[in-house]
Length: 300
Length: 307
Image (cartoon, rainbow over all chains, first blue to last red; front, top):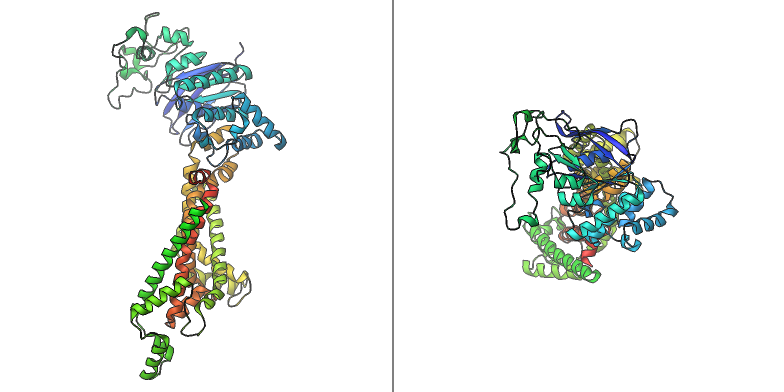
C-alpha cells in the first residue's frame, strides 16, 4: 500500500536543546489506525501536539515528510468537553471551523454540519446544544465531527477513550476505524492502554521516555514482545491464565535515576541491562525493537 | 427566576438603603459644626441660632430625628434642604443625569481602554511590559492631578475642549478620562489574567490545532470568556466611579451630584448630605445586580443552573 506520508525525525525539546521526544520516524497509511502506547510522561501527547502544530509554547518541535508537504491534521483531545468553547453551542463551534478554516460559503454550512453529524452518529439537533448538555460519548462524537470538519488527511487522537467507560470507548474506536477506512485518512491513536491500542490499531509504536523502543503489528507485540520494557508491560497485564496471582511489577527506579541522554532510557529500570546499554542501540535488522539484550523470540 | 431575582433585588436594595441611611445619619451627628449656626449666619446672635435650631427640628432628641429620617427615606422623601429650602429630592433629580452621563462615559472609556490594553499585551513581551507600565502609571496618578494636567494641556494649551462651561458630551470628555484611568488599569489587569487563563485552555489549543486564525481566537473565542471575571469588577467599579465623580466634578466644575455633595457638606446641609449618601449607596447593589444579568447573558451555563 502506498503510504500517506513518511514522517521523519519527530523531535520535541526545550529551546536550550534538551530533547524530550524523539527523534523517530512513523510511516502513515491511509485508512489505517496507528497506535502509540506508553506510560504517563512518555511523550505521547507531546508527539501528537508536535504533529498537530500546537507544541506548547515553551517547547520546540520539528519533523518533516521528506519532499512531500506536511499532511493536513486535526487533533481530538483527551477531555472531550474541554474541546469546545464553553460559551457556544456545538454547531456554532463547527460553523466557526467550516467558515473560518474551510472557507465554506454560509449557505452550505448547515448542510455540512448535518452531514458531519450523520457521519459520527449524532442527530443534527443534538449538535444544537451546549457541550455541557451532552453526555461523554456524545461530546466525544461531536469532537470527532469537529476534527473532521477541516477535512484532514491525518487525525490525531489523544487518549480519546480515557474519559469514557470501556464499552463507550470501544464504540468510539469502532467509529474512528470506520471513518478512517471510509474517508481514507490516517489516524494516530495514542493511549496508555496497551490491550486497547492492540485491538484498535493496525500497528503499535511503544514509546518510553520519548524514545520509540518497539514497533510492530499488535498481535506480534502482545504475543512476542522483544524490548525488555514492552515485555514487562505485557507481563503486567491481567490474564485469565494467571488468575489469583499477583501481577508482576515493573521496577520503579530510584528518584531522579535518569539514564544519560546517550543511553537507553529504560536502563535504570531494566532487569536485563548490560554494559552496552549505556549507548542507545539502533533498530534491529527487522526494525522491530531497539534493545541490546532483547527477549528471545517467542519467549512469552 | 425573574420573580425570585426581582424580590431579591428589592430586599437587597432595601437593606442597603436602611444601613446607609442609618450610617449617614449617625456619622453626621458626630462631625463638628452646628448646622443651625451655619444656616443662621456667621454673626447671628445666640438667640437667633436657637430659633433656627427649633425651626429646623434640630432641638428634638437624636432618636426622634433618626426615626423621622428613616421613615422619610422609606417613603422616598428626604426632607427639605436647610439652605435652599426646596425638597432635597428635587435638587438631586436635577444633578443625577449629569453625574450619570459622566460616570457612564468614564465606564465605557475604561472598558474600551482595558480591552485594548489587554489585547495589545498579548502581542509580545515588549507590549506586555508597556501595558504594565501604563497600568501602574494610570493607577498611581491621583484623579485630581490627572484632571488638572488634562485641563491645562488639552483645554488651555491645545484648546480642544472647553475649560469652564461647555455644552453636551464635549465638556464631559476630559473629566471622564480622568475618572476612568484608575479603573481601566484594574480592569485591564483582570482581563489580562482572564485572557492568559483562557488561552491555555483545551478549546483554544483545539481551535489552534484546527487552524482558526490567531487573532480570531483571541478576539472572538477568548475575549468574551476573559470578560466574565471582569464583569463583577466592572459592577463594583461603576459604584466607585460615582464616588470618584465627587473629586473630578470639583476639579472640572461640573454641576453634578458630587459637587452638590461637596457644597452640602460645606454648608452643613444635613438632609442633602444624607440623601446624596443614600443615592450613592443604592447604586452599588443595583450595579451588582446588573452585573449578574450581564453575566447570565455571557455565560450559558450560569443561565441554565439558575433556571
